[in-house]
Length: 526
Image 1 (spheres, rainbow, N blue to C red):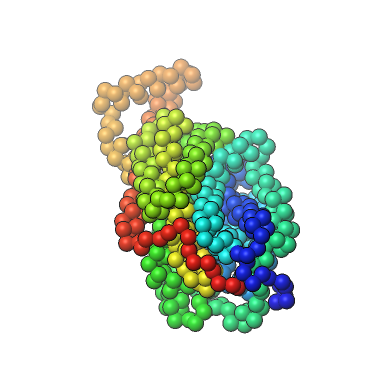
Image 2 (image 1 turned 45 degrees about the horizontal axis):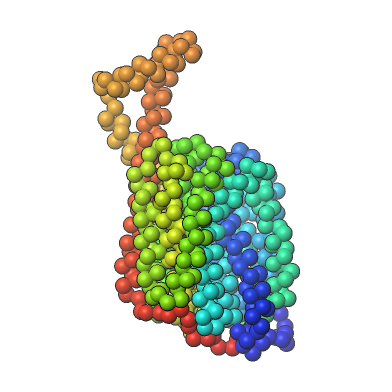
């Protein structure tokens, strides 16, 4: 981390092979950190069984990781200026690898949640750092290839996470979801300090760090996520902890905004949002975060709770998204050379939104056949909208603001995912009760269809158990389960509709963006 370390005057002048290898190492770390957000999605039932955890507790296996990432990502720009890109990335990879091993060794749900939070926090710096370094290393048209690669990985990792996770859990055990990171994590830790050398450390920045901003931001985002995650289960403001955290979030959020616009060197450069394309790009990053994470969160839950799929079946059902995204990658790479990237972005947002909307007519019989077209559109949409958003947002920034603003840009995507998942969880709870009550209103003992159903169920259970009274009670229980299942299906339909409507806002925002090309001015020397 010494200032005397030899750094090229302009990293973009390095040999192409060196730049590509360095970029590949960063992409590997970035992919691991992003993949692990959702790799557990299809295996939560197995993890819950292994750790004796309830459904409510299991949700924190994903949420704790995402919250921790959200808290650390905005600080990555400052950390890389203080300690340099290579040492921050190497330490982040080392911490991520170590905590991955600890997650695999977790002995109960509390230890798992703690280790997942540490895993998210320690690995978070790898996410925005790769965006910044790509724009430093690659000038001109090479930047299009770099941003396309990062955009593809950013949308592919959460998509194939449950697929890989389901297969690993089925073949070995859920512990290997985390042990999977050990070898590539060690590789990145060792090689990044040797090959990624794009800037100097400046330890003097520690003396003027924005520590009040860090505390206010942590209080705001941390308490906000706790309220959104736990609110539905704790009767919202009827719970003292929820009420207290709401006040802390509001106060810290207000003070953080005031501080961010008045401090000389704030931890998060909110002023960059005044740059039109960066502001719109950040909004679109938030919306695509909602789409990416909510779709990957909702689909496995639907297949598990409604269809009773196991980890491997869920993974297979989700595989089509990744397949179509890889197919779309070739088409996007070709079209991006000569087609206005705003048109590609609009096409991607439409496909993504329509893909989510096609989930609305789902039924209790939906499996991978019925999911194929919606997921194909999602995969194509992800590939066509994410890379242009990256280029539009970060390509509009002067080099001096790139590191700090990159953290904000990535924060918006993960924040969209975290808030989206929390809101979806709330809808699954509240809308389920609403739909159950509405269905129950139409179920009366005098209706011939209901009478026939109860009679058949009672006769079946009486024949099996030999008790008429218990058979009648079992028939009522079967009717309750049927109503609950159909209410759950309607609830998922409502939730996917809400997700799809977010893309209408995204499409409208594109109208206000400035034209942008496939390249941006080369960055200054660092």
